[in-house]
Length: 214
Ligand SMILES: NC(=O)c1ccc[n+]([C@@H]2O[C@H](COP(=O)([O-])OP(=O)(O)OC[C@H]3O[C@@H](n4cnc5c(N)ncnc54)[C@H](OP(=O)(O)O)[C@@H]3O)[C@@H](O)[C@H]2O)c1
Image 1 (cartoon, helix red, strand yellow):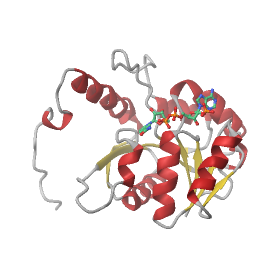
Image 2: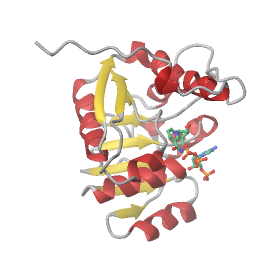
Image 3: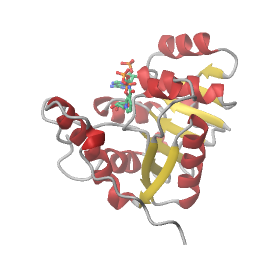
C-alpha cells in the first residue's frame, strides 16, 4: 500500500521506517521540506518526501503524526479543508494531553474528532497514539504483544488501520465507534499519571481473560 504520513517528527520517522521495512511505500510531508527530505534520505527508495498537499494523493491511508498545537496548520497545509482527505482512511495518532497534569487539553470531544471536523469526508480512526514509535522498530523476536486499541465509524477504514497495525507487528483491537475516542485518548494521560507516581501501567489494570470468540 502507499501510506501518506503528515508530520516529519519522531513518530512520523519511526512509522515510515517500520512500514517501509514491511514492504509499503511511504510519502512523508510536513511544514518542513528539509525534515521530510532527511527522513526520505535516511530510509531509501521506499520513502519519498512530498509537499503536505501531496501526502494524500493516491495513498490508501493517511497517518496524522503532528503535535496537537500544530494540527490545524498541518491539516490546512495538506488541503484537508478543501477535501483532499475525503474518502480516505485517516489514522490520527495525536496526543492532546497536557503533560503537566495528564488531562486532555480539549474540554470536550477528542483530537480525532477535531481532525474529522477539519477534514470533511475523511474516515477517521484513532489509533497508534499509546505506544512510542521507536518500539515498532525493535526486533520482532521477544517483543511483547502490543494490542493497539482503535476506534472509528467506518468499517473499511478500521480494516485498513488494522492491516497497517498488523504490518507493524501489533495486534489491532477495534473497541467501537468514535464515541469511544475521548476514552481512548484519555488512556495516554492515565498512563502518564501512573508513571509519574512510580507505577507500571501494566500492573494497574485487571488481568481479565477474554471469553473465546463464539
Ligand atoms: N513520538 C512518539 O513515539 C509518539 C507516539 C504516539 C503518539 N505520538 C503523538 O504523535 C504526534 C507527533 O509526535 P512526535 O513525537 O513525532 O512529535 P515531534 O517530533 O515534536 O513532531 C511534531 C510534528 O508536528 C509538526 N508541527 C508542530 N507544529 C506545527 C504547526 N504549527 N504546523 C504544522 N506542523 C506542525 C512538526 O513540524 P516541525 O518539525 O516543522 O516543527 C512535526 O512534524 C503528537 O501528537 C504525539 O503526541 C507520538
